[in-house]
Image 1 (cartoon, rainbow, N blue to C red):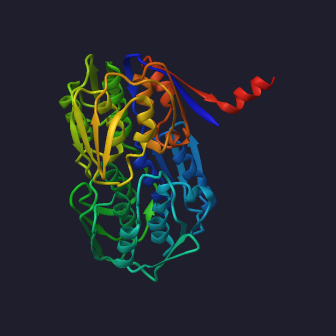
Image 2: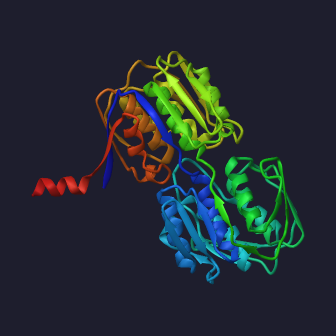
Image 3: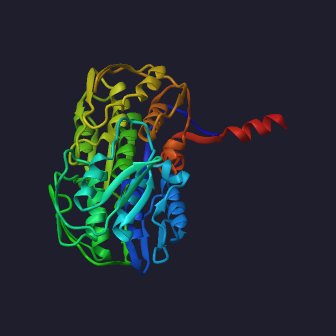
Length: 427
């Protein structure tokens, strides 16, 4: 069992390189299963556990996957199986993308229901609705989604709620549907656009990704291509907020500033100085932050994946701040841990009312999910004394080399293996 140890109160200086987007990579990799001709060479892949799980899943399906540094070479021409039911499938949320990808290629798919972080109810009803509109018959038996179709036929589909996962999954299947599919009330996140761009390079015909309506004209097959994943806007936001909380001056590199506009705007409102360049942002702060209110919303609104992280900034800011969480109903569990550090918060339904305190104190914490783990790291960076964070497997799902990146900025942070420590004590 590993844990992260932090000795806080150090300002951050220097520069940090942002990795490829987790949320794009975990959709692009399953999309490669749809390619029956040639190889897909995917660059800027983040070094995270969810990517490792997907590599293992693709291997069990019959694909040949080679990883060289931050590049994946995927040959799916030998994939014969439409069944994905390993522990890796069950233990990650993004495995549901295999439903649309396998259904597109084989007209049938058997995929275990996905797991992932416990942050509230995340049904796949919109995925099922969209795939059924394309002609698939879908049932759930023995913990698996079973989808079959004699053929897929294009249709007009209106999503009841904006869903990134449903938008991408139905987009996969629609690539091989006869005729034209029109998707309305779709997600517009940058990684949705990234996946559409990847599919188009393979030979798909997708128009309108990033707008309210996506139009897909079906094709017969997809071929291999070379592609580079976009930078991770959530990882970038995390480091920007770490600087705002700890104080300092850091250049956040390899980003697309437009993807960060909602986050930059709130940091400026809190008193942080932001300098925007073509592919980087400089974040500078030397004073206590001001209170701010946020409401999470689909892109281009404030990202729910950053809500927990800005919650830490609010906890040490002047005055009273309010978070309104409109996406997930159970994303405030992390405050139960942060209260141990002195955070003053009151939860009222989907709202968190935070009265800022002047200091936090280090203690033992347990990461409750991916972004909560990142929030706890930032809390540890600003706290007095030592902070110990366990259940860090959540953090490893989405943050490549987070300790080494923070150490280069001046943080006192390291990873410790509990088993090794106990072994040394025995010797």
